Length: 71
Image (cartoon, rainbow, N blue to C red; front, side, top):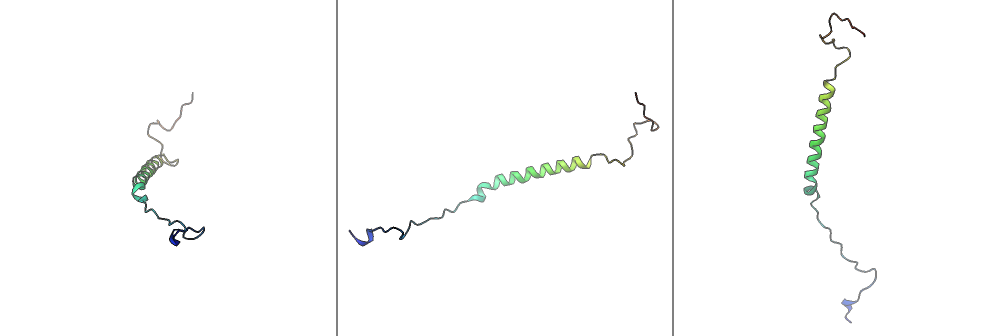
C-alpha cells in the first residue's frame, strides 16, 4: 500500500467547504413586505388616534342650549 493512501485518525480532517448563500436575496421580499405592513399599521393607528375627540374640545352643535333631557 502506498504511503499517500494511508488514512490516519485525527490527521487531515475532511475539508469544510463554506457554502456562499444568497440569504439577503432570498429574504428581501419578506423583509420588504414586513416593512410595508408595519408602515400601513402605523399609519392606521396614527389616523385613529388623531381622530379621537379630545375631552376639552367644544361639544358638537347637535345639542340645543346645552340642556340634556334624561328619560
